[in-house]
Image 1 (cartoon, rainbow, N blue to C red):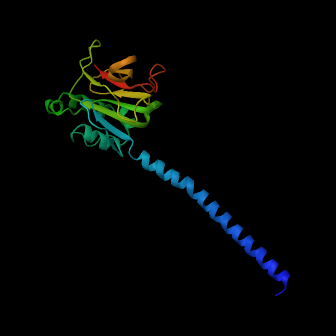
Image 2: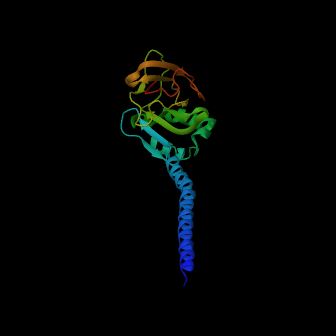
Image 3: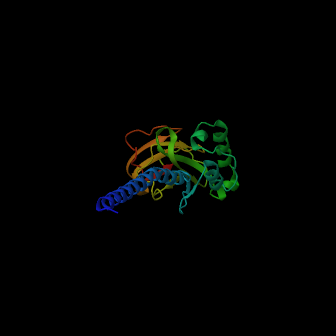
Length: 205
């Protein structure tokens, strides 16, 4: 083979190598958004969390139905799968009030008192707080309180839904300290600028 032939072969080899490398890079770049999307989907699949006013770590589930079943000790097993649907469901609201009057549910500390949302319009992740019973509506005292929001929920709440006749007070510091706003007496698609993304503890009356 002539020297020119060797040179041509070498050039084609380098071209093939570079082309292969570019194709592999492009394939990896194309796969990255899919990987990120899958990760986001996994995160979103456990965005319905519950926590008790008596303490303990929050537990998160793939649907609001499962979250409510946990919060009520299995007393309610057919809540809407999406918390946004529950906010607009008059039947579900009635059932939460009925459950709040159950002596057994009160003794077990399994009365739903409020659901709190990451985004306006009841969007994003949600956190449902449950405790030992009804609220009495006395604005000068707090029947139930969560002195510290669970990890990941500080400065995150933008909309809310009280349950079980409770009125909600939002506080900017733990143990009901700092700035506050309330009472929120009914479904609130936007809590307003005073406490938006600032809440760190919650009181119920």
